[in-house]
Image 1 (tube, rainbow, N blue to C red):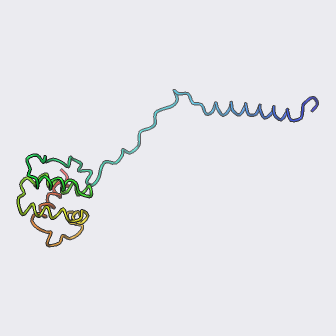
Image 2: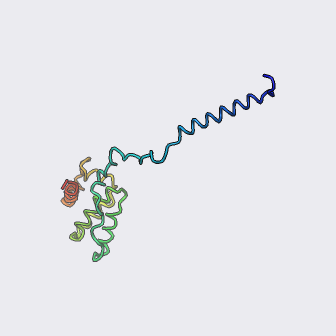
Image 3: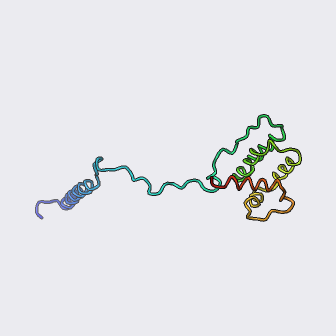
Length: 153
C-alpha cells in the first residue's frame, strides 16, 4: 500500500481490534447493581447435633460447694474425662448421685476412674459385655441413668 510505513498499518489494526474487543467484553461483563440479587439461602438447613451432642445440656449441674474434699475431687474427675462422651456419662451421673453416695459406693466410683474411657463407654452402651467384677448394682445404676438420659422425652 502506497504511503504507509511498513509495520504501522499492522499496529493500527491491532489497536483498533483491541479497543473494539475490550468494549464488547466489558459491556457484556458489567451488570447493573439493581439487577443483582442476594444469594439464595441453602436448600437444606445445616444438620443439628447428633449423638451425645443432641443431649447438649450443661454438664455441670451440681455445685461443688458444700461437698467434702473427696466428693469435690470425684466430681471434678467425673466431669473432666479423656473423651467428651465420658464427660457426659460420668459427669451427669455424678451430678445426680454424688451427694447421696457414701463409703463403699465412693470407692466403686473412684475405681471406675482408673479404667480407660473407651472401655467404660463400651460397657455402658452395651457394645461390649461388662465383666463380672464391674457389673455391680452401682454400675447398673450408671447404665440405667445413662439410658434414661438418652430416652426421648
